[in-house]
Image (cartoon, rainbow, N blue to C red; front, side, top):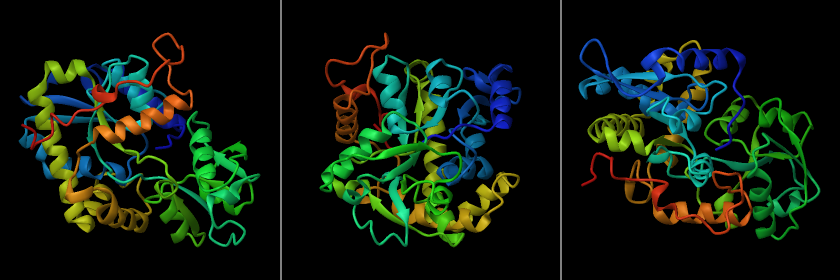
Length: 343
């Protein structure tokens, strides 16, 4: 849900990718007869991306006639690459798609990687003075400067019985490191990554889940495409998402093996293998599957609820940068039509 600033090395890689032909452009025919499809990452490879790498290592994209090119994250957000047709698909999150689509950009969510909101409000585990979000009044929040952070936190704190008044500083380190260094009182780390990293590093966190305090559920990690691509290449889109779905279902059923495949594909990046495996187990247990065991699907109610929050907070603007005067119709912000079991 919270996007970090990319390190310079990754920025350089992405800039190279988006200027070298089909490696980050529209779908094209590869030399071996496969169809080249590009996917832009939202951060360095991690367990939110497991299904992608599982499908790639297992050969399921090639079985579908697809040569997948993964574009590393850099200075250009995946939403921008997708909306400007420089990538066919991109890893995104609900706030990113909502903001872009409301502004008239060509981007649509096609697959929900996580069904459960993958972000929490967290404090050091030993903070006995903070037992509820209402106790965050007057405290210091360490975040990444995204516009929605403050209204989100204010809503949760008020719903818990507080006033919603707090100070804010920008993070230049991990959330749990900032908390343990005394630079802030609370942050919003991902429980499936930073929360586990903190625990494994001997710096455990106490977490408050947003949904426990009336905040609408969020698709924290999703895959987006553009209407132009979906309308021009519907068969390719369905084949791509069928392979993706196969990968995430495998990860949900076989977290240990899936973690191993992710690590094997990214050995230079994923050096904390204990963290990767612990994260994969947690995602498989609580996050990949929704109610009734669904994987990948999205609901109209969830998209409407979150867009409504963003509109009321004054966070949504149109193509001219003017604030919206009514909540957007989110029926076009997402689609389940390209999932493998869709009619």
